[in-house]
Image (cartoon, rainbow, N blue to C red; front, side, top):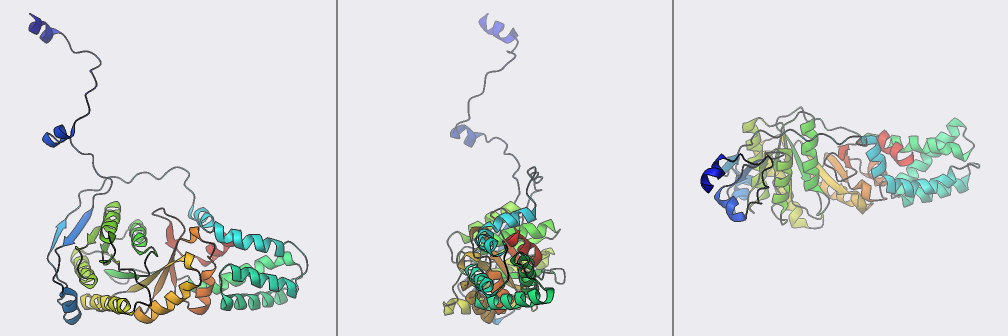
Length: 386
């Protein structure tokens, strides 16, 4: 009777809460998993023989390692942008706040009023040097400002701000050359730099930027030395839903070779090739990165189409030494300046423009994935002074 009664009794309106599944229950009968935010496409070549890159440097068939591909599932819809997100101009201004505060507080007294005289120029020289603009750029700017003051007939110190802004904008404007990637397919961008400059993070941000421009992207995990560098780049690949060519250990040149061949086969627009960090004084490592470039040229004779040096803005004037050394080794075609939000040395851009004017393709002013944007001279100057 009891069993019959239980069968006829309707279930309660509010069922009891089911207990949390134990690990054993999950293992026996796994519950359906939610769709990932971005389904990765990761191609992981099998480990090559130690001579793979050497053969790649000698023959055009080198680096052709056996690969296995995990094709992506349909990516989940991108999460909506948070409401009232600051514009790029606002983020640039916020990112340059340390440099602006250091420069602006000093200039405020100069531009507050009074007459324009030699004492004022001497104070201005000190301010520019402390902003890490370097001796050559500072000398150039002072000469330019003097000419503008004379031509415009300026008498009051409060009028000097506009002349300085125009002089700085004219100095750094030649660095403003947006990168055009439409001429070649795949367009191969090789990135280099010292340890900790932000190469791998910049690659992830570049992938996002070019995807937003409607381009397809493939990543080459060419940093085969740093611990977890491959995993870090694969994480960026998952985040952006792009293919990553990688291998356990092995040779950076062979990885880049395979990435280009995979991009050609798949019709990819852009290949971003990571490389291991190295100091310009490590001559054997500088020779190795030359080898990576030569092997890329074996894969595609006109590649790499862009050789970018990633610079940490915190190093100030030492950035010039890095630019000169890597340019001599690789023939740089562009720069990326990262971490401008964490330094008061943003004036180093003026030093680069004066002493070694390699185009500044992108600047980074934050940790967000979209805080790396093409360099604009006028926007940069406005953010420094206003």
